[in-house]
Image (cartoon, rainbow, N blue to C red; front, top):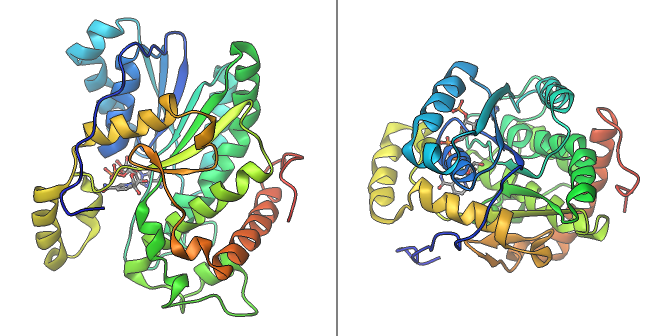
Length: 331
Ligand SMILES: NC(=O)c1ccc[n+]([C@@H]2O[C@H](COP(=O)([O-])OP(=O)(O)OC[C@H]3O[C@@H](n4cnc5c(N)ncnc54)[C@H](OP(=O)(O)O)[C@@H]3O)[C@@H](O)[C@H]2O)c1
């Protein structure tokens, strides 16, 4: 990606989500908030804001419904808040239970909530937080909502959509050099261990897990009923870098001022992946709007081995929590 990021174009005219239901995780700020707004402007009937802070979500809901663009395009829009804290599997399960009890269709699932923290902390699940929030809970969400996404595709006759907010940064994983997997380690145990925590690589590590899962997925699940893809919007001007120490926040803010895209443009890229890209994007990461070449680490023998190990470990992890679908066999 060049320093000055190339221009991005809006979505093509004529897309309508009339009658459709969408979920956006992490919709309380940044890219997720713009995704929610744009879904409403495209006439989605119901948009669920899946947020960890319900009070913040309520304020966002009111502000979305008060926007002229939303009032004009979608005066009957329904925007609901359902609490979701992806640090905690229990919260994911409560979220899906609540959603499934109230809704009989799901057309679009935007797995967007994410963090990039520099301090090692464990989530209540025992897994390192970045890995829990950015990877593991998203797999559980996907598996628990997949039956409804599939049933919705049966009704509409076209595939439902799952789009994961990813990052080109995944290529900078510590697995490549700084903290390679040891011979006797599992992938998840490696990322949970204190020894392997490299603060400035952990965000990349967690996003790597997402793409490795995604690249393995089409070998098991075809795109007939549900297209699952991911996109990287480049550098975007959001509050994500607020977690950085002040001595880094200042230079990062200067770089952001020069090159970062607006959340609105990131929303265009996100909804291109979710609504415009076709089956060719199933199991792929889109860099902006184009299918990306897998990163060098992903293509390496180590990367391929870790991809398979991660898949098998994810099957075991999910089996403790939910009914693992029959297609999700070990490799
Ligand atoms: N900004 C970039 O340059 C960039 C580039 C590539 C990819 N991304 C990805 O884009 C996604 C959105 O990030 P952003 O840039 O828009 O940053 P952001 O403004 O910080 O948004 C992150 C969102 O995730 C939510 N979130 C964080 N932890 C959560 C949890 N445990 N449970 C539920 N929600 C949680 C946040 O909720 P709160 O409002 O409660 O904090 C917020 O709504 C992330 O996946 C990020 O990795 C960002």
